[in-house]
Amino acid sequence: MKILLVEDDPEVGETVSMAFSMRWPDTLVQRSETGKEAIAAVAKGGLDLVILDVNLPDMDGFTILDSIRKRSKVPVIMLTVRASDRDKVRGLEMGADDYLGKPFSPFELLARAAAVLRRAASSSQVQEASVLAAGVIKLNQDTAEVFVADQPVKLSPTEFKMLELLVQNAGKVVTRDTLIKNIWGMDPAAADAYLIKLHIQHLRKKMGDNGVQPKFIITVRGFGYKVPA
Image 1 (cartoon, rainbow, N blue to C red):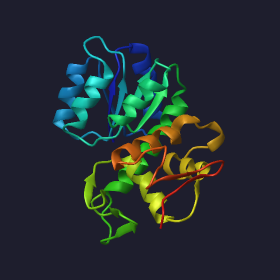
Image 2: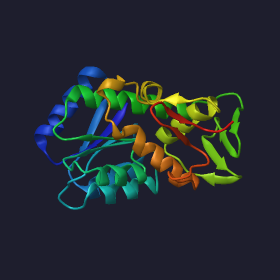
Image 3: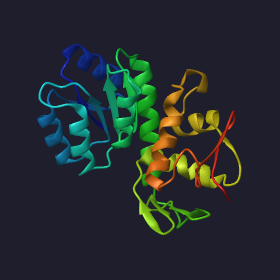
Image 4: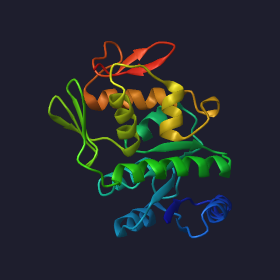
């Protein structure tokens, strides 16, 4: 496994590299200290995961993320000292698969990385032709393509897995805890309360839905979410 760590702090870089080496001994952690280096590394391909700091000396992480998403679907976890929901929303809307605030526990980073890698592997597995449908929503599990009213919708691996779970349970409520366990592989009690909410907002926006009178992803207050059968 090859991971690109985009981080200009040597201490953080050493900690992350050591943590991944202990968890996955065969992992190669390549480090870039600038956005320019990071973009060049992604262009070469062969990466399984990018861990991207928002604050870098030559450009911010959002600019780098935008460049990555124009050429690659490689999973991206963003690291940021910015605590505002606005920055988290921006990163997720631009295609980040997860985010983690600084300072962070290396063990939490490893857990989030494992979950992101599982989702990416699941999305790329070759399966028998299978199309899931609920109303005007269609998902092709072979190609990870999504169509709403026959219009293509581009989703990140995390967003695809979330919508896939909802469509598989069309007409039924999928609880917040179920989404967290199945998508992130985390203990719901330890998960960020905004994690599901932000991803649902992004899904709705990409699908042409809204949170006031949603047609595709319905909020069942106090329980979770569902898509009409």
